[in-house]
Amino acid sequence: MSGIRNRIGSPRRASRERGRVLLGLLAGLLLLLALGAAAAGAAWWWLQKPLDLAQASVELSIEPGTSPQQVAQGWVAAGVQTDARLLYQWFRWSGQARQIRAGSYEVHEGITPRQLLDKMVRGDEVLEVVRLIEGWNFRQFRAALAKAPHLKPVAAAMSERELMAALGSPDWPAEGAFFPDTYAYSRGVSDLTVMKRAHAAMQRRLESAWAGRAEGLPLKSPAEALILASIVEKETGAPADRGMVASVFINRLKIGMPLQTDPTVIYGLGEAFDGNLRKRDLQTDTPFNTYTRGGLPPTPIAMPGLASLQATLHPATSRALYFVARGDGSSQFSEDLAAHNRAVNKYQRGQK
Image 1 (tube, rainbow, N blue to C red):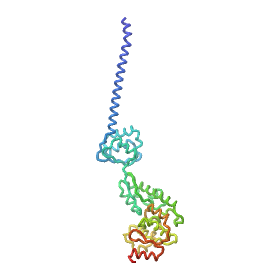
Image 2 (image 1 turned 180 degrees about the vertical axis):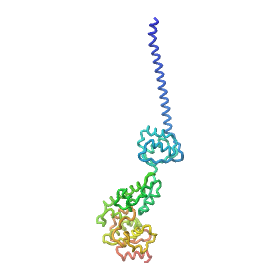
Image 3 (image 1 turned 90 degrees about the horizontal axis):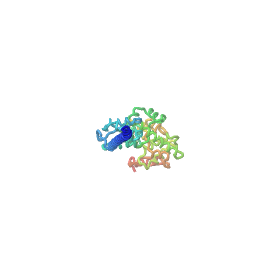
Image 4 (image 1 turned 60 degrees about the horizontal axis):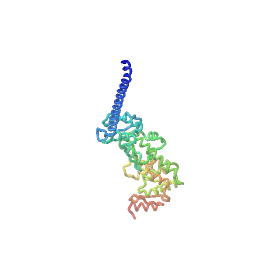
């Protein structure tokens, strides 16, 4: 009978053993779930908690091709006081690590790991700006870039020829080849990057203006239009007069009359010009002296704006050949020399 009891009792003991194993597994599973929940809660808390910064704001420039791990290390090196491994794992776990954009970023106190990643994925950069003014010459343009903050001086050491070759326009003079505007750029980019944008902008606007030009203009190419537009830019005092200023020069070119414009003479003098244009300067022959030479000068003398490009290629309809400043920014236009001389006496010499 004892053998029978042993055989009957064995399944019961096995059942109890299986129960204990299952209870142990269940307890272990619950422990793992609890630990996982705790870990998830800790991760959620970390993602929402503002990061400690070494100073009030921290900046980082991310170059193209920088890996997510290097980005995390870069932020920590810059002053974000956390473990770079945590940042990197967050970038990976989010699924957005490869969406981080190159650029210059600045973060301030209160930013969280989640907000930091969002900023880089959006490309929410810190941008600087440089303003290029209508009528500036190339020397002034370069000086403005040299003073622009956080701009690498890559093109600063290039000659004009080398620069234009780098921009893909080796046959164009640098003077007048850049469109005056306000350009925003990321910190740490090169001056050549801004120059490329300004040059491309001028090419687009010049091509568009040339394609829609008025008929019968004495201009053979977009390059000639750019040269004349630069003169119109320098000679226009009041915006309302721009079309008439362009008309005077177009009319002179049509009849072969010298342009006789002071700004070209001043440009030809270069840095030797002391602010006082003398009679001998008007009589000294240079490639840019439009008193001693007919037609257009060899290159533009400044950066013309869009208004001057449009006025040059759509001048006012007139027979005017002369103009003189009235002293208030506007000009008096005349069709013949006698009327012009009377205007000069009135507005320049104070004679009635």
